[in-house]
Length: 148
Image (cartoon, rainbow, N blue to C red; front, side):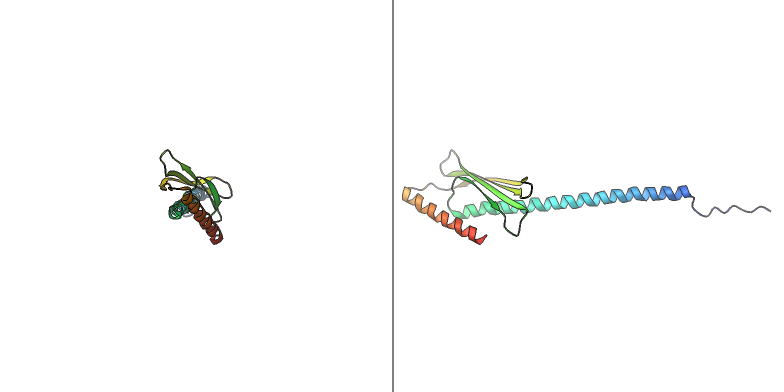
């Protein structure tokens, strides 16, 4: 009497192949998750930098007086990863200024975002008006520094 062979289990090679396929799939899945999280963080940094740069431009518009030159600073305790640098330059058209605001990573110094625009500041008519406007601007700068 012959006994029928019992082939109901898995062989060692089949189990090893299944584990290999599962391992490759898990590595791919882990890489995809890591890439997605990194892209999300980069997008968050870009968006925050863009909003802060736009805010710097709006504060220049609100000051009513533009002074040519470069200034820089940090973005406060709420945004310790960022620092800003702005440059204001006169153009060939009297009263028109080219403004550049650059947001950088405070750890690496690498530029994250740069915003450029043109702002018009009507020229003052007399030297007395200029000195009064400059004094007002200096007072508002001091006030802004105290608020930060």
